[in-house]
Image 1 (tube, helix red, strand yellow):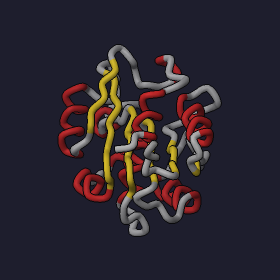
Image 2 (cartoon, rainbow, N blue to C red; image 1 turned 120 degrees about the horizontal axis):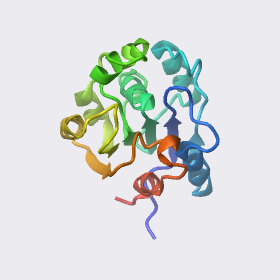
Image 3 (spheres, rainbow, N blue to C red; image 1 turned 180 degrees about the vertical axis):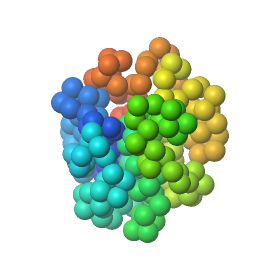
Image 4 (cartoon, rainbow, N blue to C red; image 1 turned 90 degrees about the horizontal axis):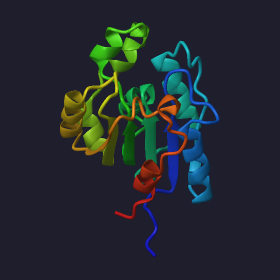
Length: 190
């Protein structure tokens, strides 16, 4: 049996963190069981996050990501991935898995407009260049990203698009306590 080329994973939670019943916590447990070096940090000030603080914490957590590393983010964690990929110490990663990203326009028009700095300077071309593979998981009814915007993002990133129907923001509130489809992508052999 051929092993997945991924040997470690960095899971980046979104706004307000994730908690023990979130699919990301389940994913961290499953990745550990699969023998992956698993990083799932609680990032600073999850209710009032700062891009610089998050980047410093992520670098301290995993200072040397490489082609054997998968980055998985949910919601605001997806925006954090784009900033992480712009960091000089990140030359390449194996997989990028974006789950329920938000569109900058929707964030700017929301009560969480103070999160806008996370959505400035998101460089899709850079992400495409640094990632071996990109998967984008979205819901067709997510208030933070329309299907048209999801499809456009997938095209710009050269990402494989995975669409879930009537699945909200792919979070606990939508019933996502596990997410085997994300685990399958990480453990895939191709």
